[in-house]
Length: 219
DNA sequence: GCGACAG
DNA sequence: ATCTTGTCGC
Image (cartoon, rainbow, N blue to C red; front, side):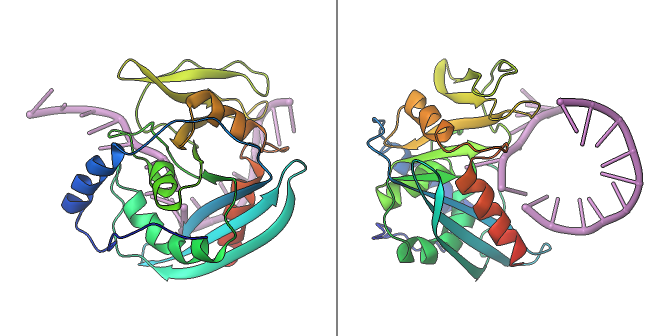
């Protein structure tokens, strides 16, 4: 797919912070169109050095049939700084995103707008790809929420700055909830629907679970 | 100032 | 994220 990224991705945390604040103003909401293909992306690391493996898994909906996968090893240039994750993980993901067909939706392992400045990894990926994205994190970065009910599908709003920025979702019984927030081009409830339709028998949505396993196995 | 802090 | 064995529970 085509990527809209004039950035250099060779920045200091300080510059990244400025760019992030600037880009946040471009995030829009929206309704989820008909989804035929979903892309799950994830990045795993090797030890604490500067190498990582980025992976992407394309699946079909409905049915969640696997259509295509891609894994690539890359060097890491940016440190992990809470709130600046996209500047660390997007560079490694860029090559495989370009080689993958443009999907109708992208599920990202991390936050969307449930972020200090409203631009989590999922939002940033949405901006450079122009594809609707949803952030699906295993823990909360900002905001507060009640514990969702015990049944699969139960959810509770994530409130941040008096705004509903996403939902804590019980993706599977007996598991800790997932924290879903819109990345780009989706409203909170649409983001929730997007993740829900990609759930299988495990806690993580299938695209994310497979991308995670893929990048970790080829390690 | 203190504590929190996606992956 | 990653380093790690066995272990408790659905």
